[in-house]
Image 1: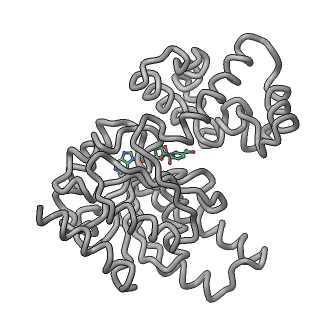
Image 2 (image 1 turned 45 degrees about the vertical axis):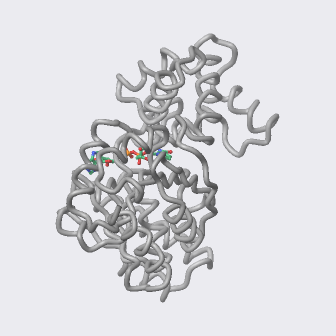
Length: 307
Ligand SMILES: NC(=O)c1ccc[n+]([C@@H]2O[C@H](COP(=O)([O-])OP(=O)(O)OC[C@H]3O[C@@H](n4cnc5c(N)ncnc54)[C@H](O)[C@@H]3O)[C@@H](O)[C@H]2O)c1
């Protein structure tokens, strides 16, 4: 298996050689932009790609504003901001940058067909020793790896939202992921200032398997008139010490993303308890996606009612 040996050798080189710290993040939405910002701030040359070039520009703008707030708080100085900004680069043509990077992080829409097609492209155009990671919330890493030559180098790197402030990254070991790749990916995660927790490739991994049923139950409480949205969120913030209520959190994650994760849990774990609340599907169909569309369980923007 020369490709696997190449991948293992390469991952050790990445740890030792700063010039090899080159990553492309594919998908510049809520998560992709945040992930790119964390890599760029940690000294990686970071390419950010999206099918929509306007989204890349918006993503880079969002990260820049995040860094300016960090300067204002005193957690980043002007020199560090300039260095981070020069590391973060738009990539409108994915095929041009793929052969130059040592790590790919996929953060596109939570649809298996779209991710499978992207993984096939990445597997063909990236160097055979490039680490290939998905930020998927719930889709099987082993199935995504089956579209790539050298599946031993494919794994999940599941960041949490907001990426700049939450320390956890679930490092998801697929059926074929090598121990060396898991070890090196954990080292990369620590190097960008996050905390890796290694988990197995099961639907929703650990975080979303626990979180999404809770969010779904909160939506069902709202749907069934058990309480209004503020009261449901207050029960969980004041009674359970959660920093944000489940309905506000669903808006932050994106209601389309929540629905997609629940559909995977429901289908792949085969249990009724994961069936998405009907009103969640209705809101997504109506384009109410949470913060990113301006309205979800709360309204955002000019007439903000969100927490
Ligand atoms: N939102 C969260 O809280 C959260 C948390 C952890 C993980 N995730 C996962 O991260 C991934 C991205 O989620 P998000 O919330 O950032 O979604 P998003 O909708 O904000 O962004 C997705 C982006 O992917 C782009 N895209 C779609 N197909 C593409 C392709 N083939 N090539 C390049 N770009 C493409 C879209 O244009 C869009 O900008 C999903 O897999 C999601 O499950 C989300």
